[in-house]
Length: 182
Image 1 (tube, helix red, strand yellow):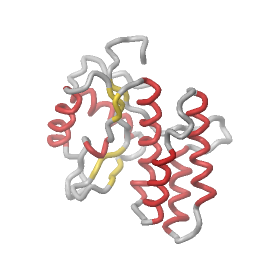
Image 2 (tube, rainbow, N blue to C red):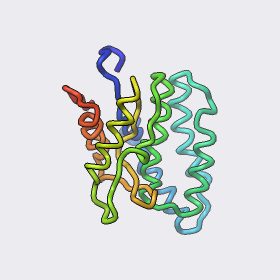
Image 3 (cartoon, rainbow, N blue to C red):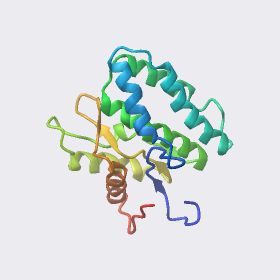
Image 4 (spheres, rainbow, N blue to C red):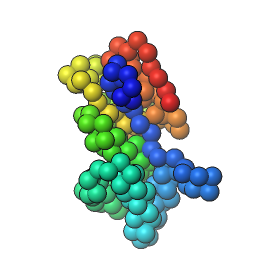
């Protein structure tokens, strides 16, 4: 990212598999939320997800407690049955916080700048207006991929591969001449 000064905005996905026998974080979040939705205890599964992020945080030599408050919120939202889209989006959201801290960039919650309409369709016009204005005021930013918000403020996700979609939305909003997708 830092190899090119023109790389100003980053759209991370959720952490994937570390090896062929591993589980993607998003799949871990879905499984954890399914337990919460069924009214079962999900503490063990949430701790495993947190451990994955702590491994990343430690590897990047960031503050060990970087996501403690975020995981308290996730636990409360899971218990309140915030929805599968909320659960799935936390992979990108949490990874975005880590990436922003690592790079020293501002963090922009995608729920504040990516919008869906009352029918669940992507609201390109509103998103472009809000996101362009937000990014114009920032030198560098990390915007998590894969999700945005409904008119009621609840989280809505794109289909799998949604971080790529978010990347193209961000590229348009900042009038990028090149959009790199790694």
